[in-house]
Length: 501
Ligand code: ACM
Image (tube, rainbow, N blue to C red):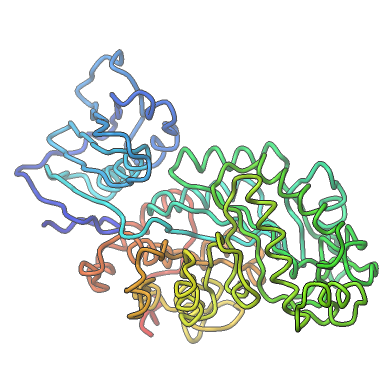
């Protein structure tokens, strides 16, 4: 096993003898596996490697001495198998895999090798991920980020072999997803009046959303949209007040926190609305999963509302908060008809989660244990290791929401971090970090909070646990940061310290 500045660390990398100098200006010429090469984002890869002039596909490209040739070989067709083998000998490389994603990840490894040094050893790298859900979330509701940044963020995830982008598109402070049947959601819900009187907001167009989904797909990433219901719904209710219990007109809030504004679970119009919204979501997104939120939903308005009390009586529900279970079952039914699987924050467990729902645990491991005990597939995203809105050091940092999440702690994240979870490993899909943006007003700040922690997350979720070694990771990190800087990403300086816990 040789040590190269690769993140995430591959399962094995063996030197096969000799090395060669990367040409100063080279073309990468790719051949084979036609169906796969058609989707490869060639321009993206040509920009990824500093001395690469072109990435071309096809055997008709006449060979130059400065070419690096890459053969893609499909070993069988298993789309879920993300593993790959990368062999490099002189200026020839071969990636063998059973899936498009495997080719992609092999190419990312090759790109790192060609970017992080000029003397390239001949080698064989055999690699596969530890977890199948390696996610990153981005909140575009608290602050809105233009589509160009969303695409750049997705490109960052792909470099580090993360394969799920959880796009948090709606929250109290903004609704960012265009819904043709309910244009007020963005006409009203995407905008708020700030305390200085300025108007803040924005939303994506359908074409932009489609562009994100297809670019992500080509980079090996599934985009999971989140429509956060029935709480975190102020922006929605500012646009559609008739869907709350008291039908009161409200403004889109310009402050953070948990609000009492909730969808009314007793009205049929709520479910007609949800049906219309999720039908359009299913048109726009090709993901197996759709995130339905479910977090931090106060039930105070439901307890006061005659319609909700009648519905509780009819359904023999004892407490108003139990209505959320009824709500979730109805939403899950809508998604089932659309052939989608719901994902919800761990609060949905408290009122009887739909049997086919995936639970995303953010509070603590106890909820993950509860989820697997109830037979749910589960994703770990605990605040203790995965909240990238937390401070990166105890002092000297820009204002953040709270908490303390240094790099070393992210590196130590283990989605199988208890005996019970380990025993139920088949139900643990993987892990995810979340970027809530209350205190991140611009893309540079999102990057500052994400890099280098995303590198630690990547290794925690991809690499075998036995290979985890924070000291080695820190040695491999600077070359990665240099590449990211060259590509125009901001980051927290590695010299700033306080990486320890
Ligand atoms: C959450 O952080 N409210 C999921």
